Image 1 (cartoon, rainbow, N blue to C red):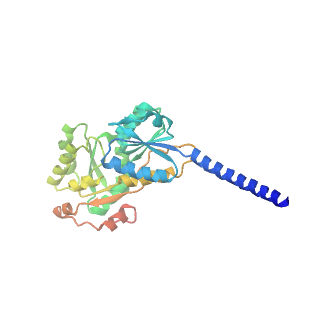
Image 2: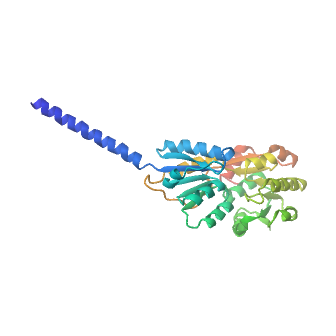
Image 3: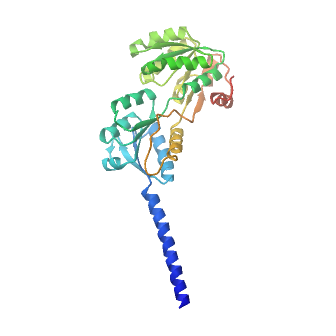
Length: 312
């Protein structure tokens, strides 16, 4: 009889333990976030970002859904129940926000375009992981690549409101800026020539008007004619003829976003302010450097100085 009671007590203890385990597992699943991913395009940088992000986010235990693109349309049911929408690119964000004002993080977007988006949806819980590198980081790369060139040319399009802050950041590292605003592509060449005449190196910032293929080609050709190097913001710009750039890859954007997602309470999302990149890479076109007669340090040294590890 005593053995039977002991066995029953043992069974009850096992059942209680199993119930607790099942309850813990069920709670963990119940409190996982529903994360909806929308992409502007199914190829290029948007595909690279989405693939990296979805793999990593699913590994955190969240339910991650690819809910569509502008070309395909959206899964409205999944969008409506999402705790967080991750939109890769402006077109993806516009599509999602027009359907449901769910908490939305936009990636693969420049600050100037994000501000336009935020103005269009003032009631939305909206933030972004921006492509724009901190300007201090761009100036550090510039100083590392061409340390003897102190006069920096800069064209301003949609980012004209940042002019005062750009002058202050340049002064902090001993640089002076020669700036011109470009209101339309018709003004581009004349404004660019004025800036190039007053500077020793051109800094290119991500701006929709100035970053179009036509504008970028004009900037590259004119700058080369003036024998003035360009410090830019993407690997593609360097491949096309800029001297160097500091930028973030789609995979790094995904990694930075995952690091933030790890900090979130699994019952709800608290969006941060728009975030500048934490991670970065550099690219140098050494063929352009040779053509311009510029001696550039090795990539390791440039990375160290760009990260703030000492002045050249």
